[in-house]
Amino acid sequence: MKRWHAVGMKTLTDHQARFEDYLAKLATAIGHADRREPLRAYLSGLLLPGERKSVEPMAAKIDPKRLQARHQSMHHFVATAPWEGGVPLQVARNYALEALERHGPIQAWVVDDTGIPKKGRHSVGVARQYCGQLGKQENCQVAVSISLVCPTQSVPAAYRLYLPECWASDAKRRRAAGVPRSIRSRKKWRIALEEMDRLGVEEVPRAPVLADGAYGMVTEFREELTRRGFSYAVNIPGDLSFWAPGESPLPPKRWSGQGRPPSLLRRNARHKPRSAEALIRALPDETWKTVQWREGTRGGMKSRFVALRVRPAYRDYWRRQPFEPEWLLSEWPFSEKTPAKYWLSTVPENTPLEDLVRLAKLRWRIERDYEEMKGEVGLTHYEGRGWAGFHHHGVLCIAAYAFLAAERARLSPPEPVAFLKAAKIPKGFRPRGAPVAA
View 1 (cartoon, one colour):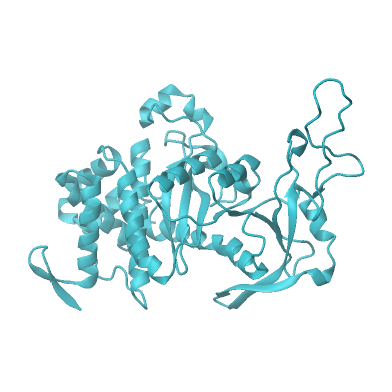
View 2 (view 1 turned 180 degrees about the vertical axis):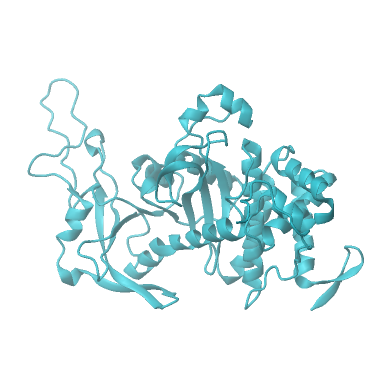
């Protein structure tokens, strides 16, 4: 299907027309008319097929006859141009949600972080730390993200680099990478809360918060979510301690009539909390229930689950009031000898087990998002070293992915970028840094 559009007074497909409208919205958010053309080139480069989405290979596909000028223009736009990423990211998020929410409202906010392997020590934020992509401690950058999950798809809504202490305290490296003076080393869960507050100011509809064990095990993080009015379903390790259903810590000691009246909760050798694993393993077999939470490529995905109402016990001997009861959810796959996963959740007490399981399992969506953004859109391909370039590239990758998500939400089967065509690359072209052919 084709229609007339105001770009060059020529006929455009619906895909092209929507892409032009989307570019116009992003260009307005970024500001300065001179940035519209490099914005178009950069987004097109990210959306076109290709193994490498660093600036030079993208420039070669967009404008091979003027490669050097195009490369310089795109590099300046992403690495040094003074535009803020917050507003374009908001535009991209809203654009995607307009299409995604036709299938249903936001079901969850997913807090996570993603690792980007890097060599050397000069790229901003690089340090030896845990990299989820590699599953081990390695030299990498780590970005904290928040994704919004709808019934059919999800889209990232926040993306911010974690700055390790070795960077925050190194004035020379900070200056070289252009790290703003206001940026300090912050724990990842605090960065996540700050980004959630920003999304709250932008009036993003609230939903339960999901997070993995690195966030879920932090009592302060969970308490801050509750204070902000969010419910949650977060992974936790099996060694966190809880009071069994119906149990609570002992009340303060009786006042002897002298000194200050005791006010802190107590426990003793006969009355003490147990680990999540101990509580769950003590349950009889008939307590477990088989639940299917979604359809997979090989049929329904199901496992055994159980949920208990328990009170967290973390350092409650320094508290005057016990924690409120929460859901302790556990999964014990048929093929495993021990329970495999644990979640803690503050969704309402009358929530059916099936709904609790489906909510907890929604986190898998963003794994697919980041797999596509890293492999197809080029999130990990940026070769610059600066703070601004890292975040500009991240915002533009999310913007490209948001357009893909919106197109997929409209079409079945999806054909999101079939209208984009790469220019013919000159014979013998090899990007800088590419390995020499054998």
